[in-house]
Image (tube, rainbow, N blue to C red; front, side, top):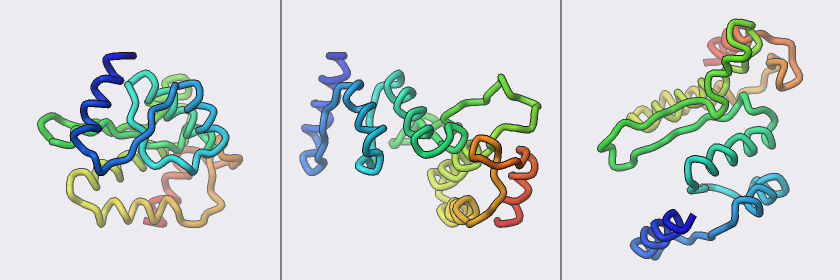
Length: 154
């Protein structure tokens, strides 16, 4: 993707205090799987970002837990917040979806909109110790049961 590479190099030159590395997607995917903790921020094209976000969520335990944000930092245009897995239409209405990705995406949105305390409250509830887990995380809770427990923790 030469055009992408040119744009990134141009933007990087405008910010000399920011260190960055360039990787081929196949090598980066392997590094995500082998040592995910080494990554803080990854800037990628939509296609590669989508692949890597799914992989990162799976490495973390379930694609159902990952939030996502497509940010417009200048705020000239709306930003979008959604779970990495999207709406999961294949399991809609069955009560088995893990709502964590959607809830965490809402926390990202709250922070972006200037409500960091509300975002932190959600993060605290999400990270609280609980034995209530959806099936994708080895539990038996339905979507509603998980959500009720999270609201209790909130």
